[in-house]
Amino acid sequence: MRLSRPLLPLLICVAAGLAGCQTMTPEERRAADERTCAGYGFRPATDAMARCLLDLDLDRRADMRAFQTRSMMFDQPVILERRVIVDRR
Image (cartoon, rainbow, N blue to C red; front, side, top):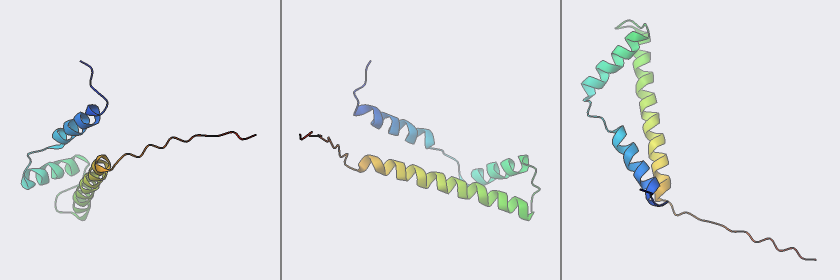
């Protein structure tokens, strides 16, 4: 089955959106982040652990902002410009 060009970006966006859906509660996310930071060698209840958790949260938020920015590009009209070069002699 061959997909038409306009349908393909839409399909990719829908697939990426569904892949990004997670059903983690905030508590589950925090526990996963703590396990990640502990895996890096940080000990619980230390400033380094708090910084690691903060960095993970900031990275997650930056990724979400980048995704939203990329998604907004599809709402914009596409302007195609075809230049014609005329050689005058």
